[in-house]
Length: 193
Image (cartoon, rainbow, N blue to C red; front, side, top):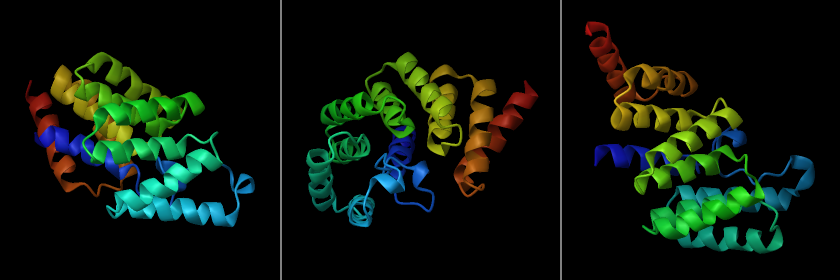
């Protein structure tokens, strides 16, 4: 259960507003030249609402974006996060697939798809989609974390997990104390073998 909560937290955190907009599902997918200040502000408001747990208000704004800017993948990916938070993984899967038809390289959507596949027991597809997310966005900390957990828990392949845990830690400035402790523990176990 702890494992599932960690991955869910990782997926949900990917929708948070951060200082680097390219690190999140929240990115609308438009360059600054392609969207107005009003659109950017509205989109950021939706992401802030999502982050703060005001799912209905966030959903309302994101749904407007799907109508006004149907070419965007980001709103669909964030609606998938909302569906997942509302315990509707089937709807989340449907929405993330829509996002990926609009942008098949959206790392955050690939990460979410992998998580949903993992929930459904399709571990090999999950691994492949986590890898694809990392290929598309090498500095995507959450995908590194999720694939590290997959290697660690499902495959019991510590040698493959460790580099991804390490990359996650470096990308997050070593702020995750529990993961840092776990990483040290599995390194010690590996070295004893």
